[in-house]
Amino acid sequence: MKRLFMLTLALMSLQARAGQITMTNPQEEQTENGKTLCVYENTNYLFTYVTSAQSCPYAKTFNTEDSEE
Image (cartoon, rainbow, N blue to C red):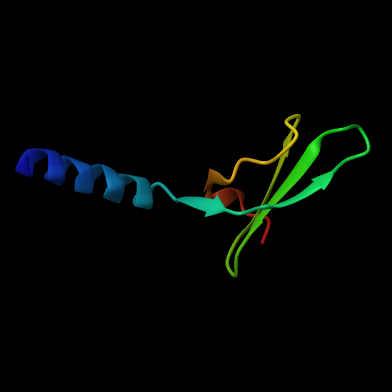
């Protein structure tokens, strides 16, 4: 059990170093061509994502280097 815990911590630290962030609760807008524009934003990052689905994913992981801010 201790090994599993240590492995989990190691994987979490690798993800943090990789420059990724998981954003939640996006603003949604419908585009003229029927797609959904998802805007994920906090005080440090701004990401947009376009999907053909009717609604945006509640949570999505982005590379911090791709932020629009």
